Length: 230
Image 1 (tube, helix red, strand yellow):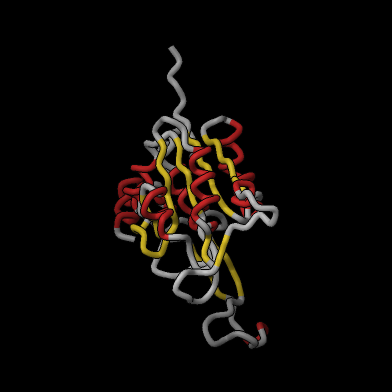
Image 2 (cartoon, rainbow, N blue to C red; image 1 turned 30 degrees about the vertical axis):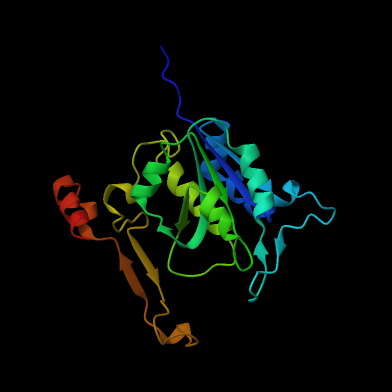
């Protein structure tokens, strides 16, 4: 009997849906969607408004800079998208829990993730309180919106979906990455190093950048030891 393929669906709610067009239609994502491992849908928040101007934001109560995304269209979007099955609703926020491999692995167990991308000066706090299941941050810095965090989370989670990578491990998954090299064995260049920018290359000596000899030895024990130490 053929084993069922694990599939995960991502629903991304944003006011800039075209940002995602190229990223999710290339490379691993394109292949995973063709194999029906992933289903990625991007939803324009303006489609869930009810006024003729398709208003998604308003000025904050109590004053303050910028505009705040309204709770009504977000509520309407999530209510329509959220089915009665294993779904997690995520709001990207600087106050959220930091995304790491453990979180990505946990989220990969869900059937569906609904990702809410904030913009401007934030999102009405009632979204965090009553709609989102959790808030997530990708780092201790501020971005203009949740679109880039959504891309990061989708890729981090997808790597734990069987079949996405084409194999069950990658260089980064094995050890958190180690130095890797490929041909040529020796690369010759009149290298521009620190402080050399703008100097004539004719005055510079030819340098040879070599692959570590241990990687050329064929001794897999020594190669593994070298990788563990670098």
